[in-house]
Amino acid sequence: MAKKKQEMTPEERLAAALVPGEEQPYQLPEGWKWVYLGKITTIVGGGTPSSSHPEYYDGGEVPWITPADLSNYHEVYISRGKKNITEQGLAKSSTKLMPPNTVLLSSRAPIGYVAIAENDICTNQGFKSFLPSVHFEPRYLYWFFKGNQTLLTQYASGTTFLELSARRAGEIKFPIAPISEQQRLVARIESLFAKLDAAKEKVQSVFDAHEMRKAALLHDAFAGKLTAKWRTEQGISFDVWRVEKLENLCEKITCGKTPKNDISSQGEIPYLKVYNIVNDEIDFLSKPQYIPRYVHDTKLKSSILKPNDVIMNIVGPPLRKIAIIPDTYREWNMNQAIVRFRPKDGLNYRFLYYALLNPETLDDVIQKTKGVVGQANISITQSRNLKIKLPSLSEQQEIVRILDRLLGREEQVRQSAESVLETIDRMKQSILARAFRGEL
Image (cartoon, rainbow, N blue to C red; front, side):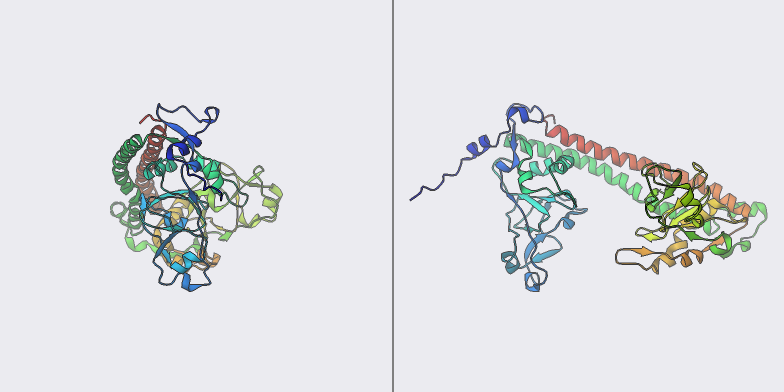
């Protein structure tokens, strides 16, 4: 009778997992070792019970998670997702029940979400999970993954979408420190992160309040409050304000088209899509596209854009993307997801821009938007029927002057807050990089 293969001791398993010197990414402190991750732990995939069997889900008490459960999830440990499965669903699928302290890593759509199992748990096929090991603290591996998102993607492959296979996950080179040092590093990382998170929370509150402050200023502007003193000085009554449809205040309001086989990364006429509207401005250089002059002058003649035209996206989500066409080109064009407003005499183009930014202008129409599942559309007719409050041209100019100043100040605050948030994120990545080099 054949002898049963003897299991390796932890020391033997660690020795077998060592990365040869010439393949080690960088030098580690004394006592640390480079190992292949798959040789010091067991990597487990997941599965999904058939949805055609309600008995696999209904009344289930077995925690089962998908990558969607980790989207915007900021805790280290997770106990369950939005769905549970039944014992029968567990038995009749390829998902596996894993013990507490298993490190759960999303391996596709997207790669890099990570959490630690707080209790017995199973996952769908979008995970590669790393069972507890005597060689690492779960939180030590958790933080390694958090600091190496780019590395994880480099180990992935695929044509339709990237996926990290169990085999490739096992080939990840992992800098392993003595357990006592791992515990010290985890405590140090989490102490530093707690301080950064406290600062981030304060800055985030300033950043999050930006849209509320902006909406309040726009409300006051179009309620006539910002120019109340100006009207008194000018001897003008608020009664001169009137409500008008935009089709009466603009030249023909229209959207663009997508010319087949005529869009390229170089060309004559800049061609705008919704992703070119960023933070209420045109951002063309990050992803420029062009169409030929003859297409611009013929097939897309009706959607020619000129400097000081105001554009708005009519396909979302999100909606409410507004911008003014800059003068960097004499003419532009646009696709069918954007509508153009070209003010007639008597309507200041920047006043129109602010009127469209005012949430109250679009609130009603957005509540009535229609589209395919996951999409929200505003029609051309709805765009033409939008109503704004209109004062005299001189008061429009005064409102624009005041809003330029106040909203410009608000934008500076927003940018400063955004910069601080980005700095905090960079600091976190720096802390993690130093930790796994033994420099923390």
